[in-house]
Length: 441
Image 1 (cartoon, helix red, strand yellow):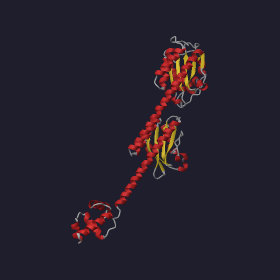
Image 2: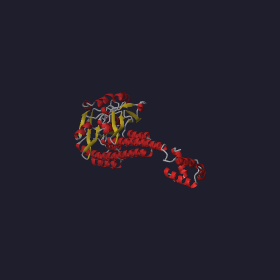
Image 3: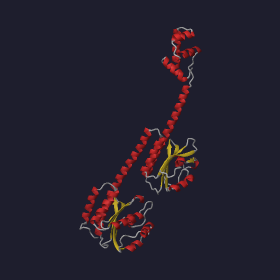
Image 4: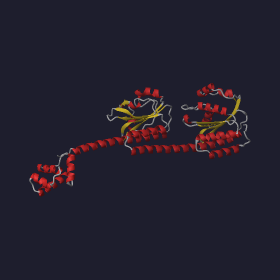
């Protein structure tokens, strides 16, 4: 392999190790740093591929210091092969990932290599995009990137200038570089996962704060849906609640839909036709059609371009309250943490809805009690006591009351004490206020 500079394998390994020690804990930054450094030390088109279970999250870095146009072409080709929503089953990198064995080929016919490509996306890319430069032969070397025994991707080089210069010695030092890169990538992924979990905990905290600081249920549900779209990458989401009459489900709040009719949608609630798990427990399953109002919303799915759907029931104390729904316009392959976070948000939403219902009922009960209290009957009093009560409420003194009923003032004082005791008050002011409020007169 032609050298840009006279650099030995151990020197290259040392240089890469130094660069990895300085680069930030970011997978893309690591891939870019490694290919850029290798391109400065050895000529050729350097390619690094970090392969995840979900192809849409696979990362590719391609660098060629001497031929940027070819590097850009190779990057476009790989992006077509490892495109979102389609798992690559062919290709040099995929072969190395599946077998775990490095691949070293010299003086490879370019036309023969093209004829061996069977992937429809790759073939389509090659037919539509001619290469910026045409070489009859090439050399290539691809090794697996490993971390703690697991293959996480590949690292390789295309040598267009000296297709017969690749050797086993170069394979050995490149494998060391690839493995150190794989370990660095794993550390970056663990760091990203930790940050992601902290962000999700912060999201749950913000939702709980919204519940604690406001009795506005709609505001709380809005915060929950904002976290669903932000932290789970959802294109749209809504919360469908069971009406108090127990016969209909209605969209309470929604986000991310193109159609303006979403807030007005209502669906007949038929427990007999629903999946029992939706009524009593947690559910986490990706579907291609809506689980609620399926017949009514198939056309909506087509208009919105949804391809994936997940629904989690809102259940508190074994009572079904509704469903939180998540919609994606692409194929969704979530992991267990994704489902766990959605389930946590669903639990919080269910608690908020239940608390809101309890507060409303408490308010209604309070008004009922107040109404009963306002219309409670007067204490058991004789006709004379009622007459004295009326006069006392009107503000007459004991002397004036005495003259009205033709009794001594001492007798009036005795009756006033009896009336205060029966009314459960301490003085004439409280007596007047209570008698007026309760309507005793």
